[in-house]
Amino acid sequence: MKRFALAVICCTLATSALAAPKSCEELKAEIEAKIQANNVTSYTLEIVTNDEVHDQNMVVGSCEGGTKKIIYQKNDR
Image 1 (cartoon, rainbow, N blue to C red):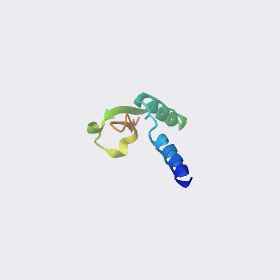
Image 2: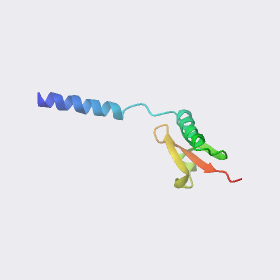
Image 3: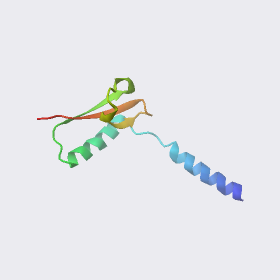
Image 4: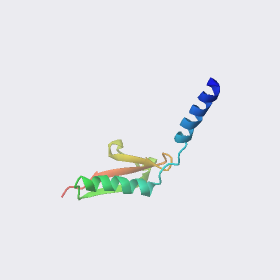
C-alpha cells in the first residue's frame, strides 16, 4: 500500500512538471501588463532566440521550452 501511495504522489508531481510551457506571446503579454501596472511608459519588450541574448540582465522571461527569451529595455526620455 505504501508503494502505491508513493507511486500516486510521484505521478502527480511528474504531471505538473510536464505542463505545457507558455507561448512567447502569452508570456510577453503578462510581463507587459506587470510593467504597465508599475507606470513604466517607455520600454521595449522583444522575443529573441537564445543566441541573440547579449546581456543576461535584460532577460525577463523564457518561453517555448527555453529556446527563446524575452528581453526588456527601458527607454530613457
